[in-house]
Amino acid sequence: MNTHTLHVISCTDPLLTDVLGLALNTDPSATWHARIEINDDEADHIGILSITSATGDRFTTNLNGSCITCAVRAGMIEFLEGATSNDHYFFLPAGIELAHLCPGLANELHAINMQLGTVMHAIDSTNATTELLTHIPVAEHEAGLTPDDERCLAEIHALNLGYADLILLTGGHDTQGGELVEHLRAHDTLMADPFEDNILAITQGITHDPHAALERIHPATVQAWGGPDGHGTWTLDLTSERAFHPERLFDFAESLGSHGVCARGCFWLASRPSTICSWDALGGQVAISSAGEWDASEAHTHIIIVGIGDSSVTDAIEAGFMSALATQEEMLFSEVEDGLDQWLGSQTPNY
Image (cartoon, rainbow, N blue to C red):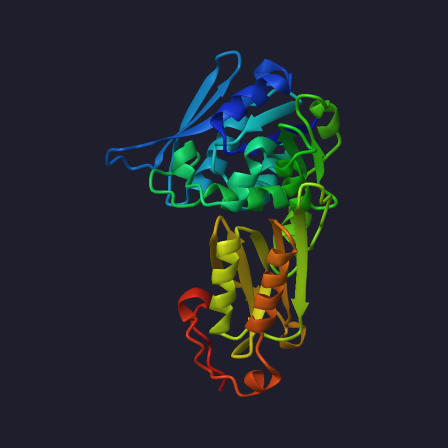
């Protein structure tokens, strides 16, 4: 029995999604566009997943449960159980985060004799700088999963660019936006122009590896990729064995927010050395959270920052990073209560 392959594409721009559906030049009966129709009434399900093809075929199913990404994945599996083509190209609903969908999807596809092929994210270089470095609510682009989705475009782009196997970049590579995307692209992630390159040929033979993709975006293993700088783009790779100071880290966060950058990485606190603390600066906002645990001997601080500007900006960011680090004395005499429970969770007492 032949194994069928599913290729998925994420995109935050509904118009670009429609254009790409034509540009890929796939079998119209094997190219599908999915969208979410949210219920405004008090129905017993979240909404409806509507999947349509270029030939006019349509499939709908209820989205059940409290996790909309989980519901979309279940709806996709239900739809794909009747798949007959060898290769399917599936445009995901706008706003889907690949890292939350694809690992489970890859596992569930095996049960219906399918495999997850190429995971793609599409972005237009004309808008990339604004969408990656400023705060644009997803609601303004009809890219939210729900009516109350409070994310910004930068959150979705940064995560999906890091996770994808192939980036579909439109609007030109040798542009400021294209250069910015290049700095956010991992070395083992491909990038192509869907209007000039043969995407069908590129995707053949690629099988998605969720473990490798998750490692590319995990705060403790994310890497600095760098790239060309002809349009003023730079990447800072800031690292230290020292912890962040639990109060001064907020000054650093405020500074990054004012500069308009993409920053990801990890840090640690002397008050909780076994906690991997995640750092995300996207769309002018900084978020910290817990990303698991490591052995205290492995604790380190590593923040990768991508932005556009002259050396005065990078100098200010580097100075802010150094200022946020705790001194050896501060780490030695750190307080057990660091005031960060609301972001990092309650600490487990050591008895």
